[in-house]
Image (cartoon, helix red, strand yellow):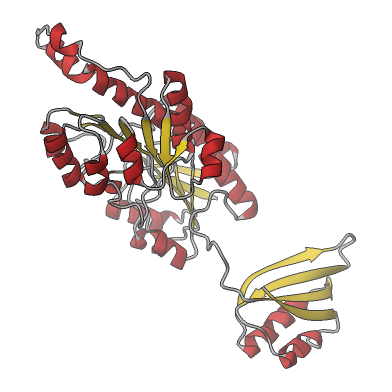
Length: 400
């Protein structure tokens, strides 16, 4: 199986892919038209990327059947096109959770202790202990979390060590789960913002989270509160954040921001960082050796399982619920052509198959086919299935 790696991947990952029997093409600087051409020319079945954009022409132009995002978010991949083309898209959730949580706390500490401005002054030969000794400390201050997935849960562990109570909201969090995590449950993002001293965002980017942190959230924050974003720039209304910094004295630590350069190096034109009290990092939340090695190992696991079964773990674009309405159960002898005859009956009846599995009994003499279909076959259709082959023992239908 040919695998194209179009982004940086640790040596251990490339070695693991080769040991799994894959033909590995490693071209970590590919993007755009060049990537589309290599995909078309190479016949690669698997594409591995990190931050590279994967577009419909790339997906459609070759023999791809699996795209692996060596990370968590899949917003750089055209999932709609992949789904329409029957291409599985898998990710590596949670492998960078510790690294992102560590950076989030690093930004909190840097905001509280003025580490960025202080270091800048020392480099330029300035000493201002009077200003830079003005810090509140993190102990006892309330940490507000938007998002309690794997990264959010790592934040809770670290907050506990710092002696910080936590109030949290996420789309899936309820009072029972909040009690298990040892946090206060908030009914909305604005409630979290109103009751915390530091607000940290750990939400995946989706249609219902885009711009979710806006004027309402920032207006609810206490004057002088801290805001940290290590998730995605798009979940925050940056204009609203700028207003909060100017008008409410909110201080912000950002690992992601609007106008972030796509490449590894370049220039930055991000007005948010010209505001006093705003510091940033270079979208490096997941960039620790530990996180990258863990992600590489998960990438190899995904490809290994896909190579063995043609079904990958962690697939994000499979239907959550099949559109099937009925289950056709066909008990039959395990003989050549039986299922072909059954499917031919369904084709003539205009019944579409959504999913199917064939359970073989010990000794491989008989089996049961479980066929999910889009509507109920008529009694005549079922009788046609029963008589489609002398090896069909029985057929029945149940509503799902």
